[in-house]
Image: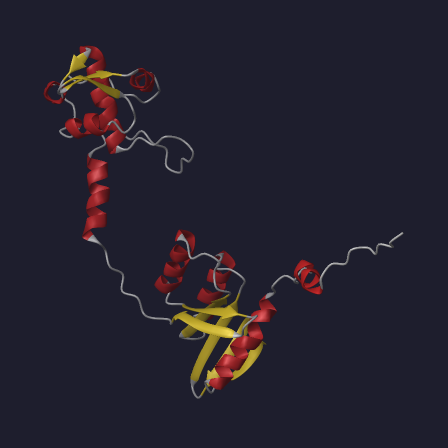
Length: 242
């Protein structure tokens, strides 16, 4: 009878299965120190409550280290700007530079704070951007978008701070107004609806039918769907036009 020995797991598999210790903020310090010293700075950790202070001649650089860009980091770097012009935030590179990450990076730029990405495993240090004095610019197109939206609303039907509920935008209000008039007429063309007080954009609203409230019954003639009638029964729906 053949003797069988228990199966052994390859060493590579065992190494893969081992859990790596979680990354700590202190892991980012050695690569930062080495990088700055190579550039001629004298570096010290934990000076005056700051994670890293570096000096080269009369230049003082202060760096706060975190594992992610968050409010605590923002508050810390802003506080350090009282003592130095060159203030940086140091974090590991993001796994995914999504919208949230881009917005946080933009915030640091607006605050005139630099951002350094540190990879402890490889020792790589990369400057995403330096502290640069920012000039606030107002985009006219963004201003127009706000003013146009406000002008398109006849009433204030939203509570500021609302989440997880349909908001009454100018587009939605115009669609509801068209639906209310259409409900009183049965079938109508965009021209008929506009003549009774509907928005000048009614034709596009009926054509694209974003909410599924309208149905074309003939060329240029529409009627209201069940979804449209339900929408009119909800609070905040406008009355028919004149």
